[in-house]
Image 1 (cartoon, one colour):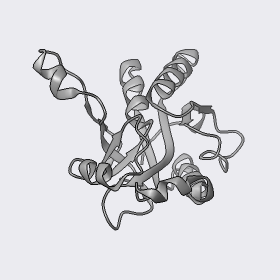
Image 2: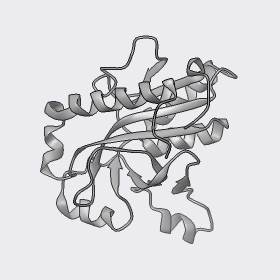
Image 3: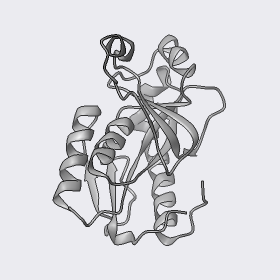
Length: 193
């Protein structure tokens, strides 16, 4: 359990569909899809609420990269998977392509601007991660730069293959599960991870 005043929690989601069932009083920022939009909107929201945010919760859907992964996850590691990290390292710079999160479980989330619906790409990513999304790393990076803790809540909506294209039809199931978990977290009844 993360001890914080619910009024000082900022929720960040990529789309209105993912946040459709959150209580009205929850401070919410809709970032748009992808790393750039997510990082910019998160940074702006944290700066606008300077000193008033103790925790950012990024909730959203994710594709399962490995068989049998379903339900809700709190990634403790997040990867920037579509960055040319090896080339940047070869140039002598740190690409910061992997972040460890204080408030997470053993799940590894790969974030990229590539919408993963190809089984070959999914299997390549599965060697390094459990789930894939398009915003988690960016939100985590923006929070790290602002010195604000972050919790990623990701609900599996698909298996990162052609089923990912059914997202509009299945997102509501994820949105309901994410809302339940967030309410439990804010009430202090969420399971500790």
